[in-house]
Amino acid sequence: MPNIKSVYNWNTHRRKQCRAGRKRYRVGIRFLASAALCAFLTMPAEAGANEAWAAETENSTVAVNVEYDNLRELLKVGNRVLKKSIDTYEDNVAAYEEIWSVMKWRQSDMEDLAEEAEEAGSENLALYTSNAAMLKNSASRIRKQIESLTSEKSTRSLEKSADSYTMAAQTLMNSYNQMVLNIEAQSKSVEVYQASSDETERKMAAGSATQAEAKAAGDRLKQAANSLASLQEQARQLRTQLLTMLGLADDENVSIGSIPVPDLAAIDAVDFEADKAKAIGNSSSVQDARHASAASTAAVNRRFNQVDEAEGTAEADFTETYQEMIVSRTEYLAAAQAYESAQNTYRSLQVKKQAGLLKQSEYLQGEAEYLAAEAAMETASMNLVQAYENYCWTVKGIT
Image 1 (cartoon, rainbow, N blue to C red):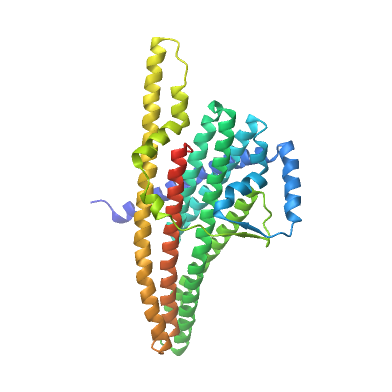
Image 2: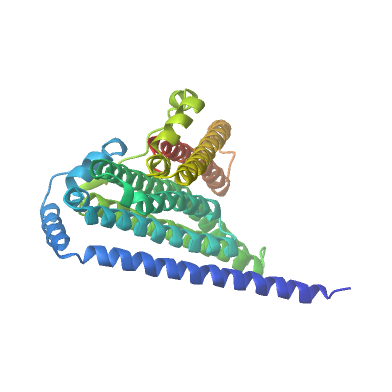
């Protein structure tokens, strides 16, 4: 019979090796993303344009509201790379590389945070994992655009560049709002753990609690505070990156709005078969295969095979995006139902508090649970918005 302790130690060692391997991989991705971004940022013509735009925005005292529906317009006005991309093909490549590097950098950060949260047993694990997947999805789409850019016609490429920037800005804004939303819920959790720790300290002083219990309460408080600090730092970084992409100064004159609620009517009205045909027709890979030259019978046969393969891939990508939207819709409805139940519980809690039937610590705990349910519902709402946007982008051929 194998030694249980040895097996446990071996499994622990393997998990550490896997984490180390994934970390080395992400370090490599960060290096490549940084190199691409640095190469882009050091382009002489763009450097001067960026400096001029930065000076203009830094000296401006006009309030700017970044809203979800005006991201495309802000990008066209403020993002120098997008404006410059109409001049040369190379600028288009730089635009996509910039977006990809930002997406991969944020994805890497979120994956690191997810691993740390898993090891610490943090309640932020699901949030970081979800955002890493969302960023990875957008980065994958941008990479496909980069790979197919050489076969795109100039005008279509420019339009897709604007689409890709808009998609990336939507993703960053969505992720930023999720962090801000969960900061409020986590702040209340810190308040709850602080009250619990203080109460345990008083009990220990009175001899009704042990030192071990006081330490455990303090550890829970510290972990909650660390989770809050992590959320705050991620929100700060995401805000800076979004505003940089929009060409806006990160100051008090700029405010970032919220993500709109999901349009369930529009989601329920999607025509799967019609949209699938559009997605296949708009796929750059399918278009390239269909328009490939064929001077012989063998070449014609190869082209037919390539078209079939490209259409199959486009259909699979579309179907996957559709299924993700349906899953997000189900999760949103479940979270909304749970939030409605939490609202009823919270109203009952408030009545008990007013009647003097609750201790402050009990009320704080109930309030924290309510805010957590609210954050879960809002997060599910934003995930559904992102899933629907991904579906619409796929139909347009932005994959």
